[in-house]
Length: 492
Ligand code: AMP
Ligand code: ZN
Ligand code: MN
Image (tube, rainbow, N blue to C red; front, side, top):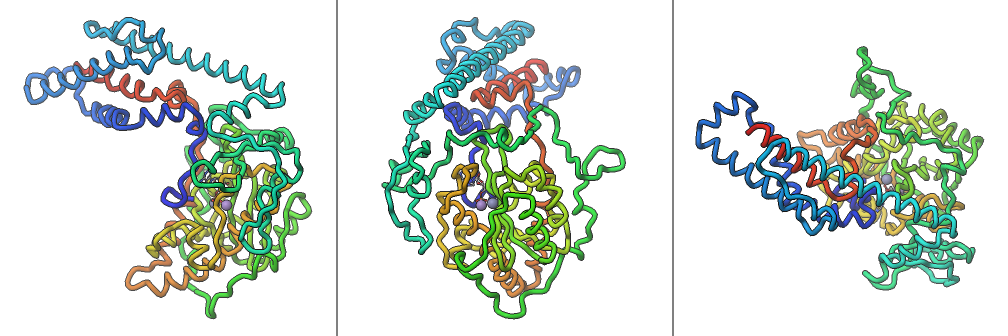
């Protein structure tokens, strides 16, 4: 999914209250500070600085910038945004360079300590929460715009065809599942609730012995060859000539719309044997559609929960939590095989999740999101393509559901299948259009090139640094100022 389709899911750190603080600090001040910091690198250092400083056209703006930065830091130090004990610290010293530096370091240390204290508090709350059957957090969440919903037996048709099961039925029929749901009803009328987090789900990491490397070390692309100097991993696609990937052939006859979900064989793949059957089928296919569902609400880097695959005749959903540890060895080959077209919509994130969780690298992609751009369609979301090409109204409410839930309720299965079920048909129609609308420019080739670029992205783990906490705490602007002011002061 890409930026201008359905909105990006917010990164994990944005999903809590400190997000509001970050939001508040990421406006004009932070961006201006970032710009200033970048530009301050152009300030000549040492001897050169004194030379330049002889000229008023240099001297006065630099002096003005330094004065502004000093006064801003003074203001920040006394800001009412900071807790009381911080405000009571001595003001920013403007006379002495060493004092100024010490002041900045001390303020940063204070913030770090505050952060550690908040983290401890959170941890204590969480331990208590676990001990009390996760009651505390649910109640807290209820107060923060979330609702705690107990399974209700309320039957309601969804108007989505025969297989539409009332959502409250799908999620609440057990009567014992307790769910926290986003309180959307308040904003847009009484809508059924889709849980984006279900606290009773056991951690898949524990259930399926999923080991995630959360250390602050770069991600190891262990399945890739490395460059001669060992400096970088080489994506298999780099070695493939374009001719091997590009196929101008378009469907000769009118593309056939796939049969309805109910008339299509469906397999939920959750054991190795069934996975092997799927692999055999993919080995004899020349193209297949893929999509992933992901959860990043309860883990640092996130986990791929499901992989949907559709061939021309069948739909599959793979339980990628349960089969995580054997997925790569089984599926790596077909995903990398340049003779098999992989059709995905907005593949940017999926490509990265495949690499991160299964060591799977994709060659020969057709991204329908890119195609819709090249075709200059009104909107580029899958929802729009489904409506436009297939007359299907997808229920995007499930996009951010808690995909760790098992057994997967019927409604979520239906939604997940729809994400790939029609994709090969859309691919056929789009290829025809791309060829027909090409006059001079080769639009199909352009989609192919852009899709390749997406495949070539390599996952990089977000590393924790000394300053990462600033993002979490919403004090990133202080760091940016810190850098800028130090550079300016040192230059002067
Ligand atoms: P999709 O490509 O639409 O199937 O989305 C894949 C995954 O991205 C979902 O399983 C979610 O984890 C995440 N996602 C997509 N859209 C949203 C959204 N609007 N809010 C939160 N998460 C989303
Ligand atoms: Zn997707
Ligand atoms: Mn999806």
